Length: 132
Image 1 (cartoon, rainbow, N blue to C red):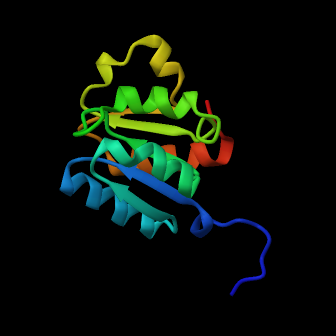
Image 2 (cartoon, rainbow, N blue to C red):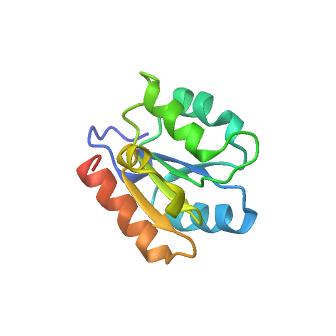
């Protein structure tokens, strides 16, 4: 067991919310290779309770999800005291449909198809500099 007090990437949980098996697996593999602990969900219904329980450092979020769509998830995360400070990286084919108020609630937006290097870069920048 490590006695270091400085958090490392390995200490940081990233919640990946994506209904596509291929994209969810790709994001998981790449982010784990970068040293993050990844918890993946394919359905929108459990995002709020999982975020509350795990307190992830960041959430990657698709907008078109079964159970509960990403637009509602962003609003619910931001409206809840225990999850409002978790940065959200939207990765979706529907980014044009993000209205300005909702876009201001997320840290970054990446449109599908995407370059995995952009995801890694954005994750690192968000976690280094916080929101915005």
